[in-house]
Length: 68
Image 1: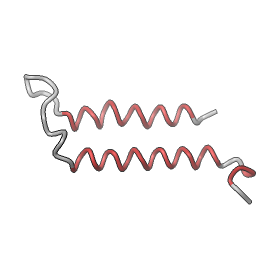
Image 2 (image 1 turned 180 degrees about the vertical axis):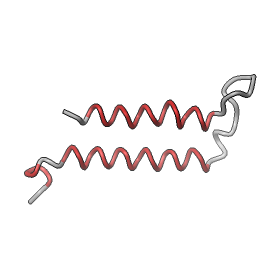
Image 3 (image 1 turned 45 degrees about the vertical axis):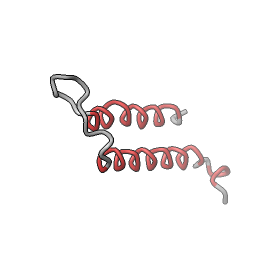
Image 4 (image 1 turned 30 degrees about the vertical axis):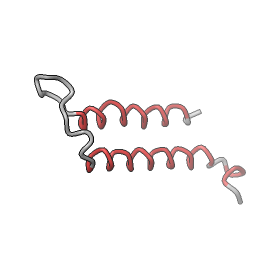
């Protein structure tokens, strides 16, 4: 049986997107490109900002868009 007949195609797409987000988080953490600070007061680094806001929002948007 194919994924389309069983209705699992959205689940496969969601898992692929979530896997991509995990790879991007790993690259974000291991790369030296995001070691700078967001603001001059050195409160938040770019790596933490990307993990909390950008990549978290991408994972949430993928989940919501593939829900229905």
